[in-house]
Length: 471
Image (cartoon, rainbow, N blue to C red):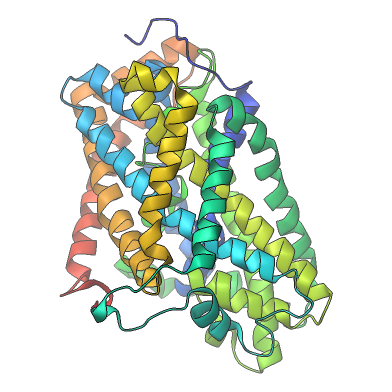
């Protein structure tokens, strides 16, 4: 099946594909999770487990997924079905994980829209130490006690969620044709905005102290703890957007002569470089906030949503009227661009699965895309309620710790052992002349990746305790 000429729409050249794949991989985790992980696990020494995870987990799985889509000219579900009649379920599991990921990613983007609008006001609603109140009480209207239910949806979040999915639909409605045009804006723009923020960051009082806490406080003892290694693998695994169905879909949009294995390295390096770069932008601002508040960087540093919606806005609010609004607008526009191309990549994986499987869906691709986006909107609605923050938290935790890890494990065992890692690489070489990397690819995919994912799954299960987050 894989040798038949394809009638699929293709990316307009290798550069466009790389931009789209980097856009899919680079998302909020690079900015909100990675810098905090480096800080938490002893600074620069954390880059050792991170680099090893990229080399022995990230690149082999990413390369396998891209080669799979490229060779079969199908998305993940039908690619597995071609290899074995009953294996399509592995692809379906990854695609469903990707859809769940998209459902809460859309809600995070809805929060970003609210903050983006708030940055256009004459005085920022989160200045004078009001940042926590603004995020938790005004934007989320958070209900702490959810034992009585999650409460009603908040209209402003529903409008923002509608805007998010409408934007997503506009980007993805014609598949690679429309996504390929959009990516020329949504990928370069956040890098330009990051550069603006970095230049500003370096001029701030206390920036040096922030950077010292980020990379230059060397604590080697953290490498003796299992948590640092698990976090490094998790960061790579989710940072590269693998095991959620979108990379094979993007790979299937490549022309036959695209050197797909080599491009996996380009994408992985771009992803890691972005994470490191984003850390400078985050920690110069955190250093400044600590300086203004007269506390240690330890006291203000945090990762995740708190960094994006509480700590960073607090740092920006110290700039005074005018400058604060400008940099707040830059920051939230950057978050929006980083997140939107990851969102439309995730939903493209879902659309591709249906279009490959059902000819009627392929014939009416724009309608299929609309249905997928509407489904994503409805899946996100429970997260716009007063208890929505907790719903996001739970979905995020379980999808990333279990759903995607299990899908990734099934995927690598099947590709490595049942279909054969060497066979996959040989098919790719026959098509475009190169694989992912000589003799290193097959043993890594067969032995290293499944072992690491089993350990990670076991670690997550034992760490869980009675209930997640005390809910």
